[in-house]
Amino acid sequence: MNFNAGPAALPLAALDRAREELLDFEGSGMSVMEHSHRGKVYEKVHSEATALVAELLGTPLDTWDVLFVQGGASMAFAQIPMNFLGPNMTADYVVTGAWGEKAVAEARTIKALGGGEPHVAASTKGADKSYVRVPKQEELTLTPNAAYLHVTSNETIHGVEYAVGPEMPFPKAAVPIVVDMSSDILGRRVDASQFDMIYAGAQKNIGPSGVTIVALKKEMTARGRKDIPTIFQYRTVAENQSLYNTPPTFAIYLVRNTLTWLKSEGGVAAIEARNRKKAAAIYAAIDGSGGFYRCPVEPACRSIMNVVWRLPTAELEETFVKEASAQRMVGLKGHRAVGGIRASIYNAAELSWCEALAAFMKDFAKRYG
Ligand code: PMP
Image (cartoon, rainbow, N blue to C red; front, side):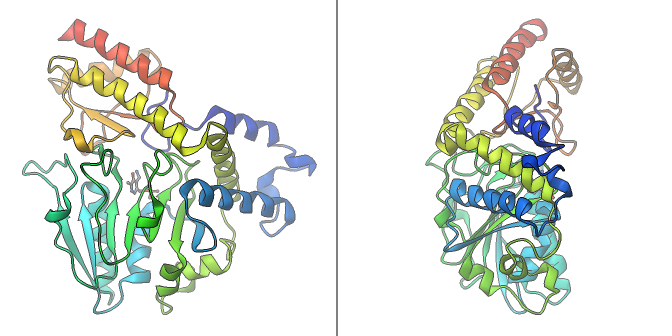
């Protein structure tokens, strides 16, 4: 039972298919990763993967560019201001955790190179440096005519997610909204049309590491600077259907397998229903523990992808992780920056794992509480 935060569990069906197809892809006598990225065999996989992202995310290819980029979401932190935050411009950032902080920090480096000014429109960092919520709309100080507003949909480390319920919706702005969906993309239904750009490292809900999904409205792509290196322009990737240079073909192939699985499971609505059940099982174990377990996140912002909680002492947390691991539950140690426990329960994590974890939590609390 793999509760790793990323790279994370992949659906068994996607891996099984990869194993079957590994040595002889579609009767071609070689593996998909040995094919030319400009040949017919790979091209079919590439366009199927692109179409699946567009369909499942709700970003139709007539009005959106759907791209495969390398460098991870971390490179996007730099590439977004490179493309869109030109001199004398401002970009607003909502900071709800460590990844949002990193996004702002990279934008500042672009300012130092002659770019515009990133502005923190809201930060929910608490006095103790923790993040336990997203801001309400009225807390945002938005810049009129900002180049964009950047938001992190789910803060993976803190377990803080936007728009889990209707109380804390995604922000609204008169400017393009760019969202880092690395850790909750396709984990639930989200109206893509409220955004102008959606990006995510694949290694949580979509496939293996090594490829980043970037969806931009075509007007957004067109707005990008033309005076930065060609390889960093989203335009270049879009104009070449993510084949400007050699793409990570095997990673994209596994995205294809993973999304085919997602679709066969009933699509995003079905996966969301399962994800909500998974999260509810663990939160119920936390809330029903009489205070032995404590989730610091405000209920309206509790992530359904990364559930975080504390035990009374760091020693007990260590024992918890050790005992869980003996029961074949791995990846539960909280991020090194915040400690505690974290269960990452992305799409491929099964409901039965979450139920087993909840049962283990009850038993552990009985023994140590
Ligand atoms: N944003 C979020 C929300 C993340 O969870 C992560 C990775 N955990 C990143 C960005 C960075 O992604 P990458 O490792 O692909 O650069």
